[in-house]
Amino acid sequence: LSTNQIVATMSCISKLTGIQNLAPTRLKKKIGDVERDLLPTSVEIAEAQVDEKKSKSCVFYYIEQIPRLFELLIIASLRDGTFEDSFNFSSYVNKILFFRGTDRGNGDTIDMIRLGNRKNGN
Image (cartoon, rainbow, N blue to C red; front, side, top):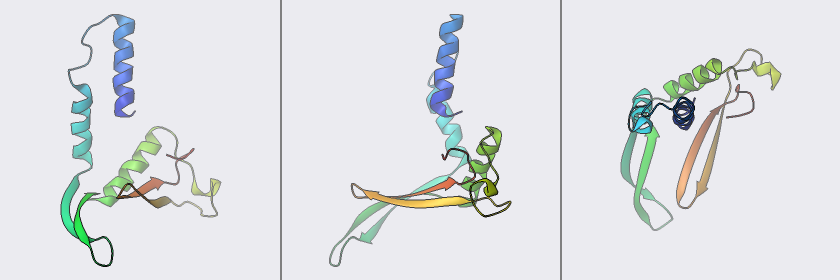
């Protein structure tokens, strides 16, 4: 379950049972803190050339351990039953596939990785 799904489920249970304060205060923040520990990230500010004559300070926010990200994506897909064999959607047999895409907009460049073996995409 996602963080929002957990919070919504706890809220629903609380309303159905009439139990006040079923979840600890600031549940979303506490879940987020645990999630951040599972996948460490780093932030750096560096000078980057933005055109032929100009450079500026840019923020680089990145995941330090890409193999750990791959592992977590596979585990999540296996756990929720959405993992499918690669041969169902490609010519590859018994392979784990990851797809990567890059998007630019509003001055940001975002690099995305997703598990290809997950049924119905993300």
